[in-house]
Image (cartoon, rainbow, N blue to C red):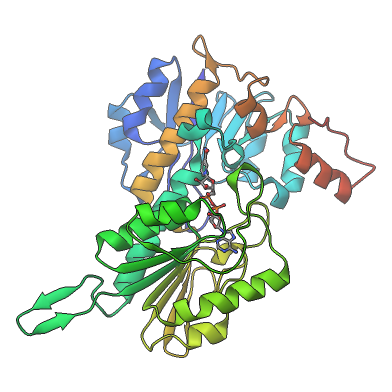
Length: 384
Ligand code: NAD
């Protein structure tokens, strides 16, 4: 069976779905692997390394021969027509924002798997690309803050006197936030962290940071995730956090609620109250922002404070992000392989959760519901 790996075409995407060191895991499992020439270049994985690892390097890996196409971003829509019915794609696939394409894939009898739908169960952890990419983003957030702040992160005691360490506040302590805390600590900053989930306080402390405890009840939804809060509680939280933010040299925000816009945790007025020269890094900028005024991919000045809005942050460290993503992808492919063939078992909980389209049907109930809302009379895919 043939696997194709494409060169990403989306603007700003520097990652690649397979790295040379993992080609062998697929060829040993019985696959023929074709990699588009230049696919790994932006992440510094070059054609000769893929060829040496056993892949064929070609100009066009998306052909009728491909049984499975791997990418980071969804495959460019114009390439879909070149796949045979029954072929599969595996990538991130934000289905709710691409409903027309889901319908097109269903009608072309293509199988679509979305990496962001890997369920959060322990068996699926080696396949969890949202977590692996959050880890990269969290590290990058800390390094951006340290690089932009015109101060030391660590305490320096010199013969000329002592220079105090930077004070950093991290809001949201999931995978990205904890990695940001750990990285700021390694650089020597004094770090305080906050998360709405009660369990997060212990994790924050285990990274060597101080857990900010507010006089507010914890907010936990199903599966250990945060849930959305009322506007009244959100306002109380902003008010209670404001003095911590104002006292920080650097603020990193990473809060998210699954399937929702990011919560606003910090107002423009609070940012303006930070000391001149302070730095704010908002990792949630693409999903609405945790900080009022954050713009994804831009640095905005609020008074004398720089507000850095993240945009595809994991891609800014494309080599480690690709390596981790490729590990997740290969683990998914091997889960779906039997006797040297790509044969996903749709009765498997992980496969079922990741499947968006298969055999002429939309397999993802929330996506099917959205399609029906948009065009109630014209769409008829099966619901899971
Ligand atoms: P996420 O990216 O969904 O959100 C980031 C953090 O923001 C979360 O910790 C959340 O509690 C926090 N948050 C939301 N609203 C907030 C607010 N108003 N104020 C402050 N913080 C707020 O989070 P994540 O990295 O996916 O992690 C969420 C949980 O899932 C964690 O407990 C993590 O350990 C767990 N997890 C489990 C698995 C698994 O079992 N396979 C994999 C990854 C993460």
